[in-house]
Image (tube, rainbow, N blue to C red):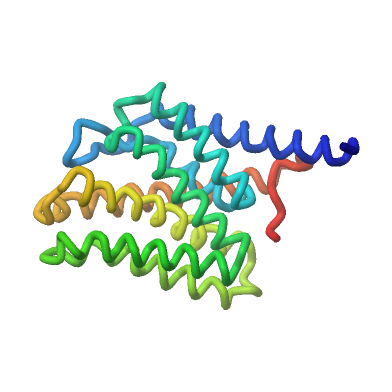
Length: 225
């Protein structure tokens, strides 16, 4: 193994460690109650889109997985779905990163996942279809992002951050319906909370990404491939 290869792997590992740590620390800060279980949503929802845009898909997957596993043990009060809660940041970070870094293929993958999440919700909770409107918007945003090649980076950030956080919410929605069995009536009250949480996630991630992209530290951020 050459020094360059070793340095590259060490850099990737440290990068994943830094962002996983950010996810863990912010998991201790509650921002919203979770209706349907004695749990709360934490500030770590702003880190998931950050992972998606600043790390490659593979790095985002492992950073969110490591962060999610440790957060599950140190902040059990936010684990509304038990061990399955770990999959929330994994879905958001991985599909968000695929959308941003892998263009057409990634957009297709994230759109298919969001469409699956929407279908999983509507199968049981069709009397209140309005809950999935933000997810449909995320699919449209992901597709439109393919045609925004000339858009400045700082204007793209909230778009990709939104797709990422809605992928995370899509996984949450699947578990809420099919694991907890929450009825459609509860989602009427959940909707405004969900919108509030995803706005916080999008704005928070955008601010973090804008700040970190201005820090002149070599290797802190993965270049878009």
